[in-house]
Length: 51
Image 1 (spheres, helix red, strand yellow):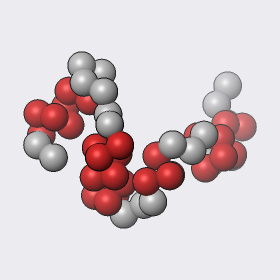
Image 2 (spheres, one colour):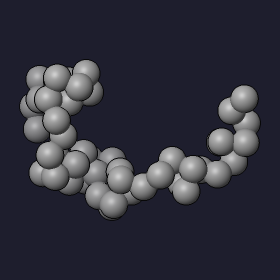
Image 3 (cartoon, helix red, strand yellow):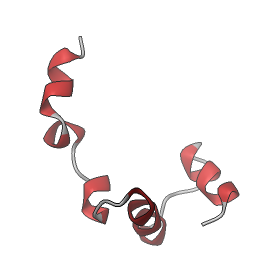
């Protein structure tokens, strides 16, 4: 994935397709499903502190 492609997804100029999600997950060392999970499911304590 090129920097330009990633930047366009980050700035919501381009949609992140499944191939992009898989590439990002691989770079982060996490399963692709982790990018689709609800933030509260991943870090329930983080939601408690956000007021």
